[in-house]
Picture 1 (cartoon, rainbow, N blue to C red):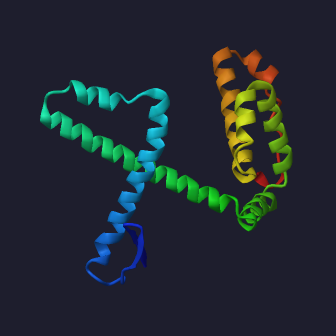
Picture 2 (tube, rainbow, N blue to C red):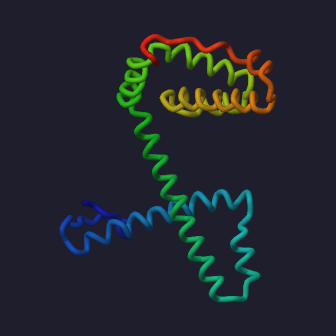
Picture 3 (cartoon, helix red, strand yellow):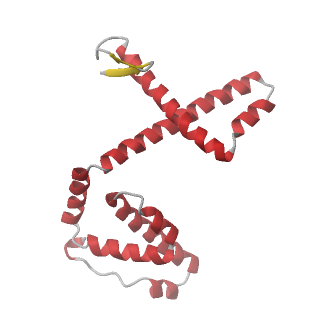
Length: 180
């Protein structure tokens, strides 16, 4: 097991008493650093409400609690960013994408038709989501388009609130062989 400490790689045996605490602490520090970088970039554009609040707060307990909450926020954001980067790394692996898409196509023979229909719905109804979805890998994009187009149609039907609008917009359900 290797841990980064002060820019140096340090080997820590798995069974040592120190090794049990160093790895979680190193992860937490990494999460906080990444979160700090991401939130610092966001604060350049939005400003920093926490700093403004702390400047006007005289109570030391509230100030310390706010700083602790800020530290936790940085750790949470950092953990999320690092997890997303890891997932993108997995997503970009061609073998992984091919394996996942192969499973979908193997068990759903109508997958291509369904994706084309959902893409058409989104191309007409929500251009911004449709264009933004092209930033996603294919194995994430197609299910996201399907889910969003379903939600969009369901929301339109509820907003209209009448049977005529529903029948006009939705084609009659087709029975698929094999109970799919």
